[in-house]
Amino acid sequence: MRQLFTIIMILLVSFAYAQRTAPAAQNTFDAEQARVRVDLKEDIQNELDLDTLYPGNFFDAPGYTNYIWGQVESEGFIFGTNDYGDHGYGQHFPVSAPHEIYGAFYWFGAAAGTTGNVKFKIWEFDGEPGDVLAETEVPLADIESSWTLWPDPDYEDGPQPGAFFVDFTDEDGNPVIVSGDYLIGVDITDLDPFDEDVNELGNISTEIGEGHPDDLAWIWEADGWIQVSVYLDGALDIGILPVVYKEAVTYEVTFHVDLSLAIDNEVLEDFDPEEHHIMITGEMFDWTEPDPDNEDMVLEHLEGDTYAITLHLEEGAYEYKYFSDAIDDGWDGGEWPGGDDRMVEVTGDMTVEDYFGFTDDEVDTPLLDDITLNIFPNPASDVFYIESDVQINEVRMFDVLGQVVYSHVANDTRHEISVGSMKNGVYFVQLTTAAGIVTERLQVTR
Image (cartoon, rainbow, N blue to C red; front, side):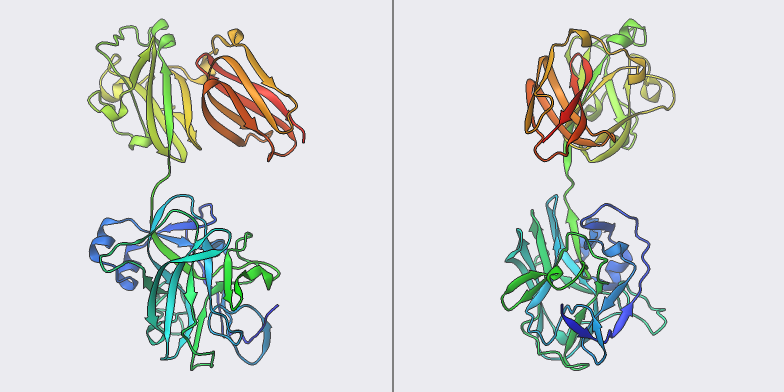
């Protein structure tokens, strides 16, 4: 454990950002903050909706602190100049989708000195920091420290400039493009050793034990990179906030709708496939009014009374509804009047099976007795197999709490699932087929 001394400042900052699941939490980049702090090219600011990423558990932590050298013994951790000969430090950011890094906010609680450059870097990360992806240098004399993360002209001890922004774009305004995990931090090898109020650089972090449990903070020592947890009984996160444009991750969601019940029950009694259309609209289209001339929402006729459309949707829940100009135009052509919209939860590539004009509660799923289905071995310890005499469109597994533990678009009559990483217990295997939906019980015993 590193024994450090006097806490120069303990910064308690209250945040009001909406919570979002991490490891790298996200908050929409504030345009006013951009004008005050970020010297990005004007066209970038105007054209892109940038995000500020919060490291690990940063926005949930109640305490923020800057530990640097002093006289009274205390425990903490230094990110910056010190007497240990550290080369630098950085925060690991897991990446689930490619994105472009335009810059980053570095929240320095202490900065003094006129000698040397602070080297801001982005490293590849694959289990540990690797090659440098980008680097920019700023004279230590130009670094601003602040007791607040964002600019606060009315701070009780005087106006505060907020965290220091570092621009990572090149001379043409091009960002750093990352498709995998990365570490972003500071190389301090060009700075003089710590000398209080003369040569010092100290980066804010969360208090010890309030970081992300995976310990995303790293320190660069003479012998290489080491996770901060080597020195601590707990984790913390460093005040480094990348400013990025993230590419959305989308999944293929195929909507099948069967018209047979609607035709038999005269909901679509005058439907003519040569003349009429089936349309879908909902939150995925911002509830744009259904229009047969809008090809993006018109379903394709497959065979018989079945229609389908494949949409590329981000993860999340969507309300939606089907319409047909065989009933009426626009909103008046709904499969039923008014609200009571359908709902789909997108968690990956999937197929949705619907009956026009009827919800799942209203439909006695046909033909299930005619399906020949075999799930083996059961109990399963490593791998189990599903075989059917009709095509299996989608397979999902649920635990006893109703949580989805597996989802896959099969489009085959045979499917294999590994349970090697699943806990022992009872699971429910749900199969969506052309003949309907069937659920089977499976025991996992390893």
